[in-house]
Amino acid sequence: MYPDYLAGYVKQVERTRPKRLELALTGEPVFPPMTAAEREDVLTKYHPDYSKGAKRPVRVGPNKGEEMTTEVAVLMEAHSMIRPKLLELGLREPDYETDLLIIGGGGAGCWAAITAARQGVKSLIATKLRIGDANTMMSEGGMQAAVSRTDSPTRHYLDAMGGGHFENDPALVRVLTEDAPEVVRELENLGVIWDKEPDGSMQVLHGGGTSRKRMVSCRDYIGAVIMRTLMDEVRNHPDLISIREFEPAVELILDENGHCAGAVLYSLDTEQFLIVRAKATIIATGGFGRLHIRGFATTNHYGATGDGLVMAYRAGAKLKFMDSVQYHPTGAVFPEQIAGFLITEKIRGAGGQPLNRFGELFVFPREPRDVESAAIIRECSHDRNNGIDTYVGRTGVWLDSPIIDMIHGEGYIRRQFPGMCRQFSRFGIDITKEPMLIYPSLHYQNGGIAINERCETSIPGLYVAGEASGGVHGRNRLMGNSVLDYNVFGRRAGHYATEYARTAKLGRLSLEHIAEHARALKREGIDTDMISPLILPSYTPEDVKIQQLARLGNIPAMHSMLRSRFTPEERRTRP
Ligand SMILES: Cc1cc2nc3c(=O)[nH]c(=O)nc-3n(C[C@H](O)[C@H](O)[C@H](O)COP(=O)(O)OP(=O)(O)OC[C@H]3O[C@@H](n4cnc5c(N)ncnc54)[C@H](O)[C@@H]3O)c2cc1C
Image 1 (tube, helix red, strand yellow):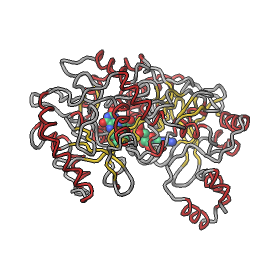
Image 2 (tube, helix red, strand yellow):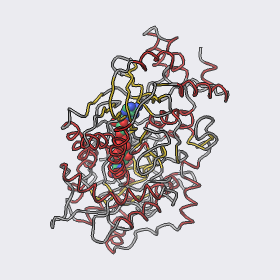
Image 3 (spheres, rainbow, N blue to C red):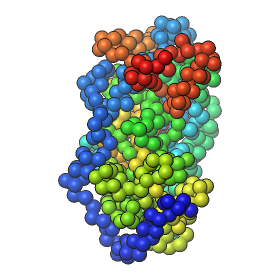
Image 4 (cartoon, rainbow, N blue to C red):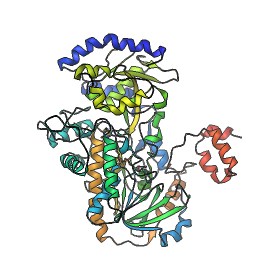
């Protein structure tokens, strides 16, 4: 039940529903899809990537001079957490030695470890929180794979390229789409229970930008099902896979020949730095939703702070498409406790309709994500003023979910979206009877560390897989291609890194690239108090932070970290 001030708007949705339902049942588009020119127009005027100050050239590193999302450029120009001189002894006597170091315990990381173990190679997964505390666990809607009779990897390829505005790396898209049916089989062999039709064939649904029904799913919690399966499989190989939890990596280590040779970990328990020496290293650290770019709420898990980007960049790897961010069109706006929470695109795939305050459709429900998000932002902007405001100052539009049961028959929503029903019912909202209030939410990184089909970077011995990598989605990922991405490239990274590790010979370990980064900041006259990787986002208000630090008697030591969170103006006026 919505509070009285919103209930009146819900009535508008109910008023327009019979006509909208009639149209939906004809099978015709319920709203005219945009032309290419209209898409371009709404993107440039309303997508946050195009707003003032959204991007700026980065001043150091392999992408120097290229535009990056401002919040990312700031991280690339920040100081390292470590001082190389203090870790010299550790470099000579590492804390851990392994064939493969896998940084990140989400889907890509687990797949890499499983693949290496199948080839008899030892790996160590170092992860920030617990294994499986990851975006992978949270994914909801589904995974794209051309498994139906009317579909093919070629069609999937064309859709993915179109969604990415034809800027994607064609070689990466090719392996993504060709490996997909095999990934579906492989996951089923490991224990994933897919949604099936009564005749035993895979159930497939539409997602935004797909020309065929191609989304395979596990109700609306595909992430929990796959992540649990992969974690079980990782734990089936205790002799070959070791796991270090709460030990995030903070810098990569190179050897004297410039090959990747492991990483420096930071124990969140003991606050010690630990050295891992590894013949090959895989970055599988996921995305950066917790940077709250442009102040947006996020769908992402707590550890998604873009650490892999920072570490790889400092070591000399090039980044791709870092001027683009994906905002998911449908993040929750009400209730406030779940602001930003993802409402899966599968809801629109099943017939859910976005509506303004008058209960009117204003956009085709399955435009590609960037276009759909921009159209929702336009509807809520001062230009149209058709959004619905909440008492805490958020604005959104409705996503009409009850219409789904009217299209597919009663019980469909509860069967297909149990996770979503449960999440809203905790706050007294029954989404089979009432719509959801939504607004775009910061969701996905789009770009990342440049790789080839073997997941290799420009640094020998350094591999990347999953959301941390860049190229496969261009500047806009389609729904379902990211779950596919970490499955396809997690396996590939495990395979090729294993091949490399079998013959790799490491030279003397070095952190010279960190010292060089510090010199580059100086040369460019960059005056910053920022330290990266961030490891965890901070939501502590400044006054509370000062009190905490003062109580610990720790203000001088933490001074730079404290100041980094003040604006220059606040810094000048702070006592
Ligand atoms: C709510 C939600 C719903 C989604 N739904 C879908 C969907 O339906 N379909 C789809 O295709 N995609 C979906 N996605 C996107 C998709 O789930 C992710 O892009 C994908 O799972 C990323 O997998 P990954 O293994 O690359 O990263 P993750 O699964 O995020 O794993 C990264 C891991 O690295 C760890 N880590 C981070 N930094 C460090 C560090 N410094 N040191 C050590 N470890 C570190 C993290 O803690 C985490 O364990 C969704 C995402 C979210 C957030």
